[in-house]
Amino acid sequence: MSHGYKAMRAVSLMAIAGAALTGTQVAAQSIIAPIVDGQDSDFEIDPITAGAFKISPQIITTARYDSNVLADVDGAEVDDIELVVRPEVRVELGENDFRFTLDGFGQFSRFADFTTENSDTYGADLGAIYSPRQGERFSASAGYARLAEDRGDPEARDLAGPGPRLFDQLLTNINYRRDGGQLLVDVEGEIRELDAVAAIDDDRDFTTYSGRATLGYRVSGPLYATATGFVSARDFVLPGTAIDPDRDATTYGARVGLRFVDSERIRGRVGIGVFQFDPEDARLDSRTGLSVDASISLLLDRRAAVIVDAFRGDVATFRTGAQARTDTRAAVTAQVEMRHNFYGRAGMRFRDTEFVGTGISEQTYGPTLAVEYLANRNLSFIAGVNYSERISDDITEEFERFRVDLTARIRF
Image (cartoon, rainbow, N blue to C red; front, side, top):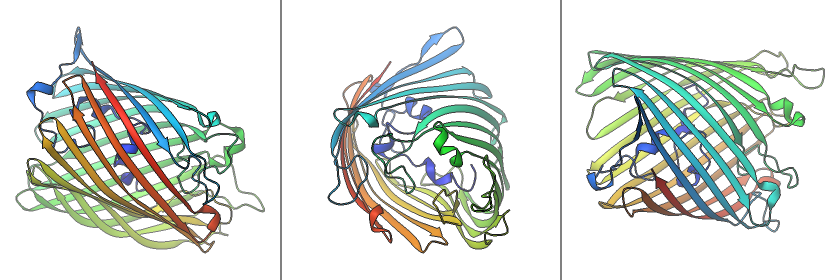
């Protein structure tokens, strides 16, 4: 993944109905605690076979109470009930050494009163994986998704009538990875195109071309010392003008860190370094900043795990007057298997957003809590709560938001 998107992989309960593609969740017995998922034979489900194809469909239905649908300031909140229906399917062809996957989803969101917030999103992703030997893998994928913005995002639309912004996303990714020996090699390239559906939002249309290369040396058992170089170039559709500068820019940098491979207790990576932001327009300043990319899972035992995710780096901005934007995100999550069919998840997340050149920064934080009950191999129920609060130098951007989810998941 590119420098600006790594941290987006973390999936909270509130993102079950909002993630772009969640094909990997189709196979998991537990959605909220996949790391400690016990894979109990009583809850395993075999895919539907059609010739050489293995098909795994599911439907996730969520009823949600949202205390602040538009993420408005205190005194202007509007609450509502939202119903989200999300069918998903994964189709697999081939075996472990060479296989194809097709993930697809549709998501249909309807509000009881605030119907302008209704949205329909959908997408599909085709992937291929070739593993000529253990510890070596080539993978490639290409996908399309229609996405709806979250009203709680730092630069989301703040008008009620038009509803949330819709985006069309095209994504192509290729990756080569080799580990298991003395050396680790992990190389990735990606092209991501984001196109706002409404013509009034054409200033948000851009394409990102990114690449990353990681080299590692085994220092002990499953532990590798790593060095990573990355580059990301953003190409906006609209050119600059005499008033508005051209926002095309290149970000590059390097990180050093650690990666755990084939460890029973610790999984993941951590890297710290620097990034350099170089805009093409001479009216914008280049700058150097701290770069962080971390995702570590610690399995305390077979039934409990703690996950730490962190990111800091440059991301795209559309805010008037902002020369650039730096995000710092961190999350700590605990997953636990309380019984063979009862799971829990609790976490705390934090995001600091700095709009460079405006003197405005924002901090958004809050806890999440969820439990999941597996009734049988086909049916499970999830209940979750989510609280978030934003503090900003611009008081019109501050909000508090409380959401409660009741979800049913049916696997076929």
